[in-house]
Amino acid sequence: MLLVEYIKQKKWKIALIMLPLAFAVILSLTVISILRSNVIYDGIFIEGVDVSGLSIDDARFAVVSVLNRKYQDEIVTLKYGNSQWNFRLSDISYKFRINEALEKAFMVGRSGDILTRFVTILKTKKNKEYIQLETEFDKSRLAEILGNIKKQIDREGKNAFITFDKGKINIEREIAGKLLDIDINIKLIEN
Image 1 (cartoon, helix red, strand yellow):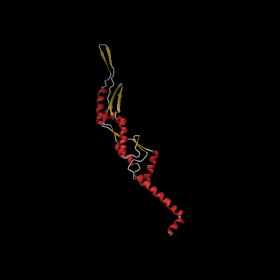
Image 2 (tube, helix red, strand yellow):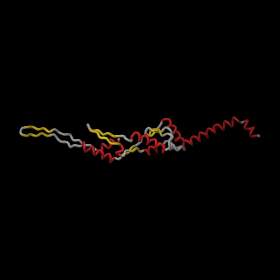
Image 3 (cartoon, helix red, strand yellow):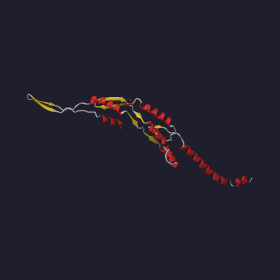
Image 4 (tube, helix red, strand yellow):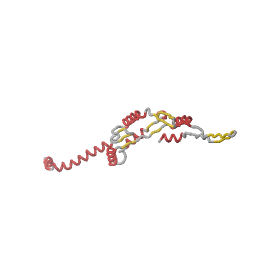
């Protein structure tokens, strides 16, 4: 009975102690549950696709679906003078480095101490983080395509010259040569 009477008399003091303690416990549990999450945190986009709250596998599916719609039948057009040549991205095995972007997205807010991680998560949710995909392609296949174009473009130059034949002056005009540099064009296409 003494304990019950003591609690009745000191209710406000007990509430004053328990309220911040309960708040601290709830806050700690919330932070721990956020930090231990196995999904990509809010505010992260890969190539314009919102991957917030998705697992790595779900994010991969979402990004690949969008990329397939955008680039599956994408055609590259190369022009020179009045001529043009077309090829599909698939002809040069053009690919996006999705795994690296997914790893980067998943690691946002997962390094450093607890406070740093939590602040990073909150900032990312507010300010958003946009991750651009890196790409790769088969340079030898592109070189082969450019080699075929080179055969059509290249022509040897010819110097101008003057000849005299039976009192008549003949002037041959110069012809400018054209050479397609495959390495330079690969670098231009890369960038």
